[in-house]
Amino acid sequence: MASPITLVQLLLPLSDNDGQPYPDDLLEGIKQELSRRFGGMTAYERAPAKGLWRHDGKQSRDNIVVVEVMVEDFDREWWSGLRGCLEAKLGQKALVFRAIPSVLL
Image 1 (cartoon, rainbow, N blue to C red):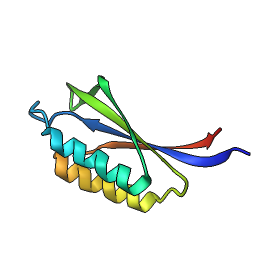
Image 2 (image 1 turned 90 degrees about the horizontal axis):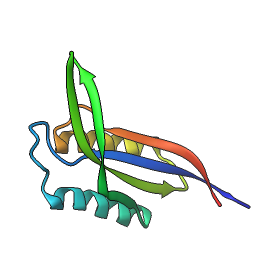
Image 3 (image 1 turned 135 degrees about the vertical axis):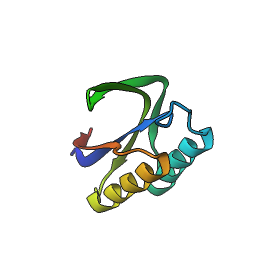
Image 4 (image 1 turned 180 degrees about the vertical axis):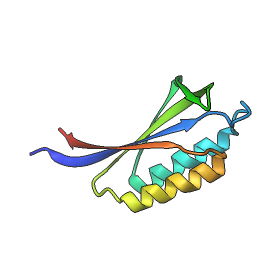
């Protein structure tokens, strides 16, 4: 029988709001923390995704890395806390985290 899980995706920018790349160890630390806590993670880093949006009539763009974690017991409060912590650490107004109900085949 297939097991229900939640696929959590974190869309993390590779640079700050001034276009300066974050230190490699900052994003590496985030990945290591997730791997330790959940037993693994996947980061799509080879071809960064491009983010494009409008705010106050101005167009902005980001290069992002997508980090995924599969969890059996989704703790919304913990993930919301992590998002807030990372927003502060990365100097971002809002980061996108997605929780997708899934079935592990």
